[in-house]
Image (cartoon, rainbow, N blue to C red; front, side, top):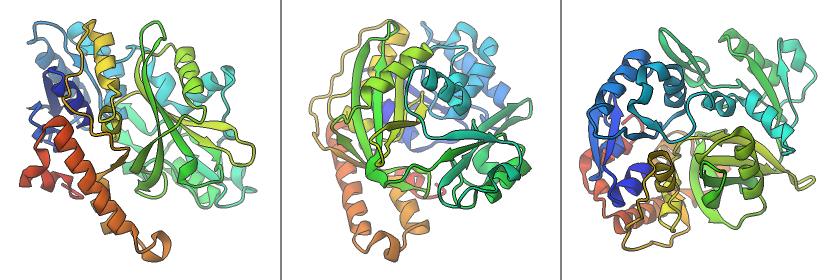
Length: 375
């Protein structure tokens, strides 16, 4: 949605390709194109993408909006070929970012701080670890095969990682046939999670950047941002840029760190070479990361044409709010005031988006139905 609005408001035609229309398909800036299911018909999905792309006078720029799509484009690059321009270096780089083993190897070589991390081959490897102080996850959350794409969430039932008893978590991942990484859980709350959102040019030049902090997440734990605020840079943009340059990456990426309160180190957690949910928070405040990435990929020089900047420094996920209140909210844990804060933030986000982008998405009942859990 955020990418469609940013590009569309600058006059760049946008198409949303999916097997089912999501919220972005209802935007006035988007044309919805139905394609096969990425997860069950991956190669056919790639073939259909190429068919749509070759109808254009110039190869369109593709922004995969989830990791699975990034990996599918990498796997089937020979199918898509030159029909599209990727919004990042392709092929040959995506797995270096999405595979945490490879990402952390590059980061370590670049001198970027990391949490303590090691591989586990059997549950015995973590038998002596204290519950609640370690996180267990696969190096990559998706597996591609000729039968489609399998996800960690589908196979194990959690989104990104598992906490609790490390031995139980390792057993679950091994039973689902995933390799296992074990990471120290850095102490501290959401206010210690800091993200550098960056777009680099092909020469490594920083074209745009901003910093945000996560205040809540959904689902809990290890979910996506629920409340995200712009923030002053505590020192994460420089290591984020250094990491991306070491990878040979250009385009748009968000690089997440956690500040270790024990020694002040900025420890790398993750990097996402694709659009993310709260990207529009930056757009509303004058940071046009997606448009900059589009210009790099296409060789164009499109300028933003937003008439007004909302200058609001908080983003609250409408879809995430409804899911959180329906499935996760516990007054004794989260406090009685959080629902009011979330709902007020949703209203603020919706109004700001309407004013900034002139996109009446949320005025459509069909759009709201897509925002609700399961919609």
